[in-house]
Image (tube, rainbow, N blue to C red; front, side):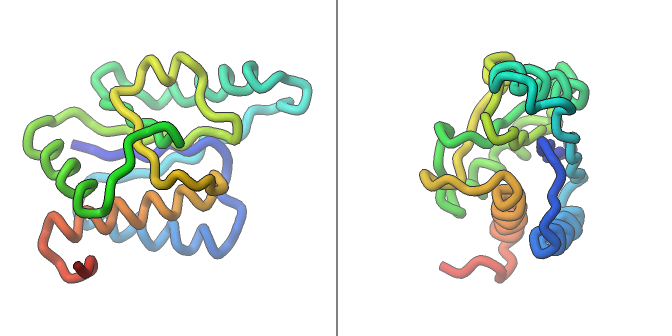
Length: 157
């Protein structure tokens, strides 16, 4: 099974890039992993929010295969604590071989087509984070989940 993180827009803050690169490297020790930054929609200033979301969805769908399990990172998704998240992932790894694609959308959220395609949604917090910061937080939690599953000392209870 492969894990892909699709993000809309580039990470342009150096301190975030450094952390993202670090966790991408660490995650690669546990699973086949890649992060793909999808460029922002060109000419977005002349488009409505709905049009932007549709064009972003078109770009996201280019990276999703029919058999992939798609998980949206969305404020209305299910919240987990770190142990619950690790348990959910471990169960998924044991009982399903489909590739997983996590998607972080643009500033206006997702189109209805992406909501329809998604198998589930998760929320990292009830708080709102910038889309660039969410990448780092998600990657750290994914790494933490792998260390919990392996019984490594990164997570402290």
